[in-house]
Image (cartoon, rainbow, N blue to C red; front, top):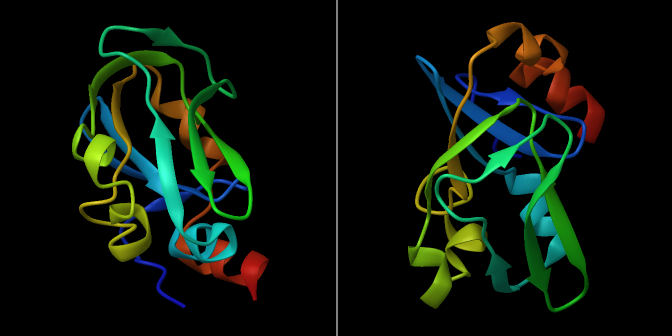
Length: 125
């Protein structure tokens, strides 16, 4: 199971890469495997404000539909527009080209509830 050490993880199987006050968010390799082939991703708009815990995107797969939840309050900085035409990037490269969005956040303590790679690995093993 691919669980990069340099990321944070949520109980809902999102990963977070923090760079200053910008968090890049996607779903884990485990989550994309559980979903199966991704066929569509509904993304928010840049500039939209969201609250921690709120559903911010929807991933439609052949087997099911899943929401992506935010681990922080903030404003959407960017969305991965490549997913509009190539949603299977999530299946092919969950931690790279399959990222979903970037959000600007203000309070890094909101990430305190996130797991490190070791803790996340123990929840999916």
